[in-house]
Image (tube, rainbow, N blue to C red; front, side, top):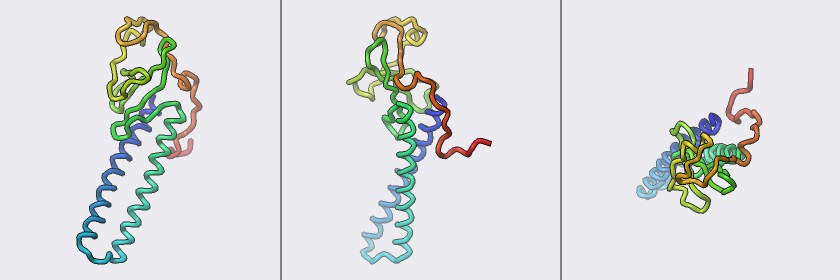
Length: 162
């Protein structure tokens, strides 16, 4: 979970930054259109540099998302770091849900249900003593692609080991 948490944090921060920079770029373009004058070369170069930086950071954001998807999880909402873990609970497809800032995975929703309506996980389910509240009976939770040991691969932006 520490790797998922770190990547989710990077995604949220970069996503928010990209939104702000896109807004500033739109404002610059709007001001230039309202002035009805041809843009000076310096202005055009500044806009091109901003656009290049946005494109590079958008690619970096997609790389972060792909890194999580390679772990078998789904980035549901980049703005808040909502992450889904496709799972099986007693043989029934379900999705465990975690959001950046939450200490652990503590929510779920059934396949075909709205992702924005997360139900709390029953603590007894995680202890193998499911009370049946909100979940199928039993105690087996499986994370396809997650239950197997994950290879220890460094993040693309992490320094090489010493």
